[in-house]
Length: 193
Image 1 (tube, rainbow, N blue to C red):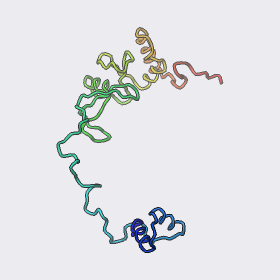
Image 2 (image 1 turned 90 degrees about the vertical axis):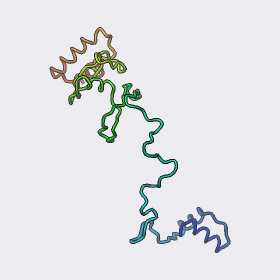
Image 3 (image 1 turned 120 degrees about the vertical axis):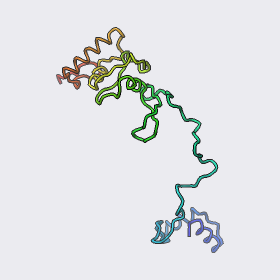
Image 4 (image 1 turned 135 degrees about the horizontal axis):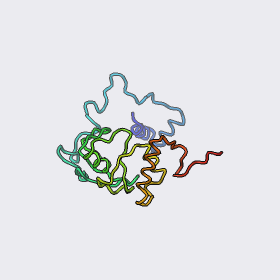
């Protein structure tokens, strides 16, 4: 019998008013075991045999064709709080969840509409350094090494007049195979130690 049934039977037999927790504590303190393992014995049928899912449909369950109230349409945009990039809902299969739609970086989506898929090892970056300016002529393609060097030279924080020069320097350093490990935050690391 269950612990609650045992408590009722115990109180009835001995004319007491013990709680279920008191009965459980007594059993544990005195090492009294019922022999139950909590497992299904061979041949025993489970209480939910033939039931699909945890519970059956009820009056509050979703009906076929119903959409949640907070569902967003294709083209919906939101700003990702983690890094400030604009995400856009697109009609593209999500490779992780297999859903028919997904959120994608807006600047990448705009680039891919004009130029095709972004090649491996490349990223779409902003010429003016502003994550919110997703205009097509403000987007450029950089290698990951170039992006690293641009970040180390603080490209985003530089005045607009210096950005083309810094970008040219970054491309030259990346092409020359400049070692990025000697840089920390735009300054050369002191290697004299």
